[in-house]
Length: 285
Image (cartoon, rainbow, N blue to C red; front, side, top):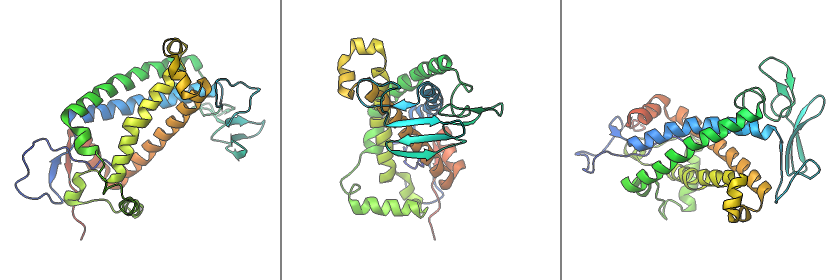
């Protein structure tokens, strides 16, 4: 999702109304640091998570699940092809999931290919070490970002959703504008639109916390200390399934986010996330 919210550095209003071509201070230092640290942490956590998934590419609901049980999702392979099975629906995924070529050109029968899983060629122990190491980079800066953003008013000022923004007509209008690639310009580009707010709120307050909690629920040590957490999530296999679903939701968010950055002007967007300063798009004629 393109970043188009303003974080003006000063509290004093501008002398003249903002217009296209003006430069505003858009992202505070805490937001910029968290964004880039989070980008690194999530990239390696997703990759190492896929490596761990490759060890048992099946997902179940409930407390227990093993080869003899019926999974709700499975990525597998026959002698000649790969497949993805979700419930009763089975799709051929040869070349991408289930059966693909490794870095050496040889066919492999892992759920996710070498290029998607970290650290590359199948290494379950290595994947676990990477996953747990980068989890600290996800959690500690994430908690600091929460504290800073509550303290400096970022959440209240930039992410608070109003009743008028959530009206179906307004939501549908924003969906159509995005589908037509008509993005806000001039002063209107200073603030987040409702779709951006919804996606950022979902990421910060739903997806990332749920990712951490479901990850903790799969730890035997945490289960001993916080047995209520595993009960709340419906059992270890339910926690593992939710962990995977949330990871795919975050991956979907990243894909859309990068696409919106490219469509909205990548140089201006990336520069604002490095320096904090953003040039408002020119008004449409």
